[in-house]
Image (tube, rainbow, N blue to C red; front, side, top):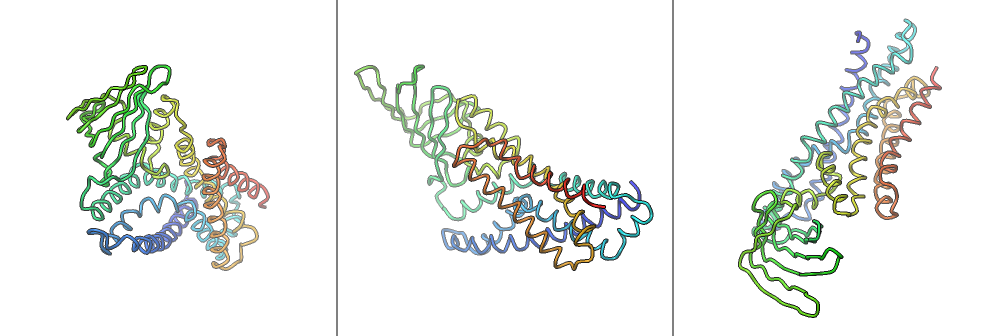
Length: 354
């Protein structure tokens, strides 16, 4: 890597960082405004809403990185083109392919940053933000915070999760026979994790079905052995797009093992990988514009082009995400579709650059 490569990479990274700071500032503002609808509930004040907005920054950064990378690359390379630095480099014998390699390296570095954000920083901070918000809004953390339906062999469980996202509320237990007939229905007032594969069901009442006979009994505390853990429930009740790749892979394997539909998690899994890979080509997409038709254009024109392309890519992903779930389409194919289109357009335009 020579001095020119480092100069191009540094310029792209600097402008991308600047763009990311600006868009994240806007994202925090919009999140803070949206949170005003929940302020005043319990101990959730304006200060807590602002803290929640700040805690959501890594997730916002992960989602906005492709847009920031594209705009930053357009502005960074555009500034080099406007000052004729790229023209001088090409006149000195530096080929388009050599410049493209430097630009692609900058994109790979941004991909590395995206991986760190999406796998290690954003998921735990987003979960912590949601838990703190729940604690502030609801003084009684035992209130139900949503139910998760999961299947574990011949057991079907409906677990009511508490607002803090950690403890569980009530639990419905449906026991099936090997030929998929209902054998028993039970309900616990409170379910407490007691190890990796065990639960303690407090205030448990169960009705059993044996042919034409129906019997009922109650227990103060009933132990339940299940592969469904408290940690698994946290994953199952979270938004798929907010989960790390490893967590999504664990959920997919569990759903497939229990013959359940893993489609939302399959799409989220491959979409995360495709979205991350797309950053390198989003950076590369700036080259045909700054060396070609936008070489002498103002920064405002490049910014507008970058916004249009980035927002178009973002909305295409969201549109495909909705269509995958609603229309029962192949999640793996559609998860890669926006990135495949981006790669095709980028390589096609680069091939036309002279």
